[in-house]
Length: 266
Image (tube, rainbow, N blue to C red):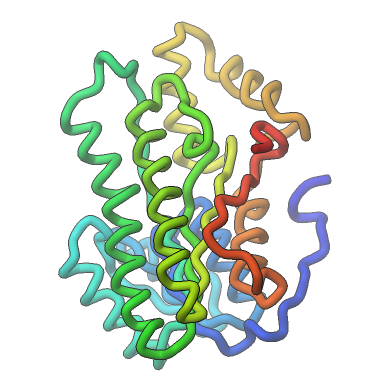
């Protein structure tokens, strides 16, 4: 059944909440923004591309706003979060979703590729989590959901640096969750599989060249590794993120929740 055909669960307790979604202009982030907005959450779309964030905010409506954030830079994260507080009147939820990838055999990786992946995927989660969590501690409430990856559970060939950056996200999520649990703040992560996004389109082209196969063969392989038999859609991930922010997940923290269609089950 396509993701769009599934009924949308309702979480009345989320209505009126305020959220920041990083990397929210496109892909999984864009789906998270829409899913939260449908629950009555006012969303700040944080993105390095302000024009794209503004376009997404206009499309979503429902009080969504755009904020320029470069998750690699502390000053940008702090200024962006302050802008969220001013525009929304506060912040209760953080979906730290901004991420990047490149692809190369491990022995051919450059320092630039390694640093780029870690700066966005790992440092970006650290900075946004820390800045938001400091605010949540002062407020006595808050919830964080980080976007990790299937590659955070099992090392992915041609993506060793990306896998390492996402494994780090899970370690950080588990440790931060244990530190913040006594303060009533939950921290979880989602681990998507082969998600049909612009990022995947780029990866398919890279992988096809590196493996000397066609892009169609790469897609076939992705589907073949997925027991549920289709490419994952951004909405499949977004719905789980919304669940994790809701009271239905009130006793879940420190988890890396697989949303993979069965590719990996541990």
